[in-house]
Amino acid sequence: DELNLVRGGRRAGDELADPRRATGAVRHRSGSRFDFTPPGGDPTLFEQRNRIGLITSENRLSRRDASGAGWVIGVNIAHDDERLTRLLGPVAAPRQIVGVENSVTQLAAFAEGGVRLFPNLVMNIGARVDFTRLVGEALDGRPGGNEPNRTDVAFLPSISVNWRAREWLTAYVRYQEG
Image 1 (cartoon, helix red, strand yellow):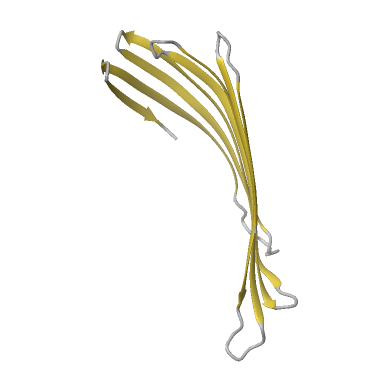
Image 2 (spheres, one colour):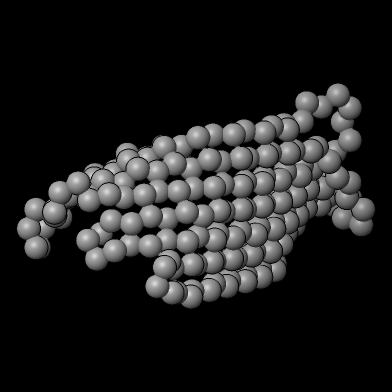
């Protein structure tokens, strides 16, 4: 089995806004082998191989003042590839019996802004637009397969209220889709 992780980030600030970026990548390979020999039969091997690759990055710019009001804008991208194969047969030469490869790509843009309605009440309104592309492919060579390929776009609103009732007590309510 093999697992590789990479994580990176950057934070730099100025007087106008606070830019942040976070990026991560994962590569994972795993496999399993089992004795699948039937009672009294020839030696038979079952093998499964799994490969996963994921990369994600978010970049955002934000500003918050001392009263708690502020704004944030940003973009996020994530891409995931997975490949799963299963083999069965004689130990020296098992044959692939099933296999699938799937990938998902998601791109999102988001923004949220807050305003102070009263000295102890801040309301935030925001939205996120998600674009998602899913692609699937059978690797076992069966003709006429209906492979799942789909593209979705979603608008996901949000609203929140932050009420500072006392110096030591804050009530926060948020509605968010997605």
